[in-house]
Image 1 (tube, rainbow, N blue to C red):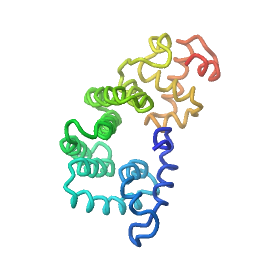
Image 2 (image 1 turned 180 degrees about the vertical axis):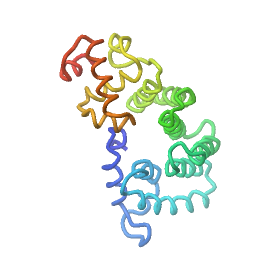
Image 3 (image 1 turned 90 degrees about the vertical axis):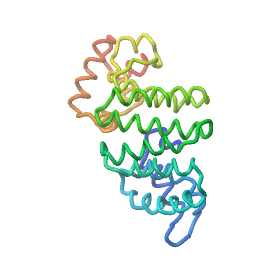
Image 4 (image 1 turned 120 degrees about the vertical axis):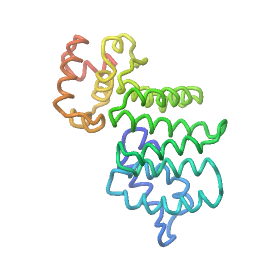
Length: 229
């Protein structure tokens, strides 16, 4: 989960896929089954996708046999994550997951589903639709005291074009939502190519944003940017 939070899905997928082999039953199968929602999230677009699909088949049988609404919700979320980006299947999966999440229980996982659905909508160029789910996710994460996840939701809100509080209010007021997200990733040490990949932008767009960020903040280097933020 920390690998996912820190933007290292490949590392997360490698760790989780290595836990067990569902086909043979070797390894920590129970642990992997419980962690399947995170394995699917990490591996959906990586070389570990087959391991995630195999683990999800086991998870589905377990979730449906227990008749637990929470587990059915996680199953639907996993199928949404494995569906093509921007597809009707993905949207239906997320909406089914939100219907299954029981009210008043499992608030963290419901917020995670809202976050992932909001991110999916934002990446599918539907920022207005995304904001509702990202707002709800951020509010729940904040209430639960999981600040790192709340900041993830805030970052997605900024990428969706909404101005929300950043690490430095004066800097946040000078930048657009997308510029602030670019600035944060660069300040954390990401290259322009890495920023482009994580935000689904072209490197040329990132270069353009970075020039404008430097101009608006009155700085000349990435080191100065890190200090400002």
